[in-house]
Image 1 (cartoon, rainbow, N blue to C red):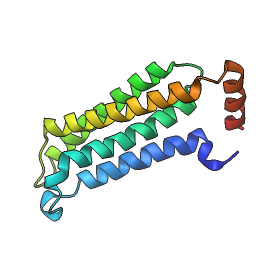
Image 2 (image 1 turned 45 degrees about the horizontal axis):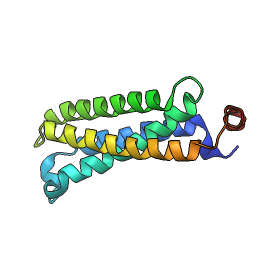
Image 3 (image 1 turned 30 degrees about the vertical axis):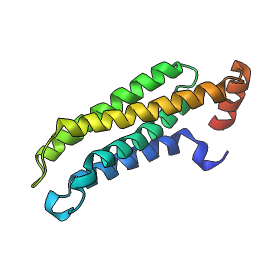
Image 4 (image 1 turned 45 degrees about the vertical axis):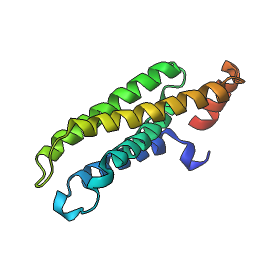
Length: 142
């Protein structure tokens, strides 16, 4: 098995990325000049990437237990929840504040990424059978 196909690595990437988000959110605002102009765009991209990572990890973990829609729903819920917690955290960082517009940008990034993921799943998954998916899961879990 290739190391990057494992569930452990998929979840590790999610945790590391969340750690990076938390670290960047802990930096006081005056030490980050010039970011204000594109703040909402950065939030959108940042949380779109988190959504892709989480969807990948969830898909590898719950491939037979949850539908694509359920995986998407729970992933979006977790990403938007993390975005809200991150904004609450920023409220306590000197020079930063909590902004519901940032949460909206986070959610928009998550929804865009989720939509792209769902379309790709529907196109790619159209030719798969349950048996071939189980064979793939067995291979991935080895």
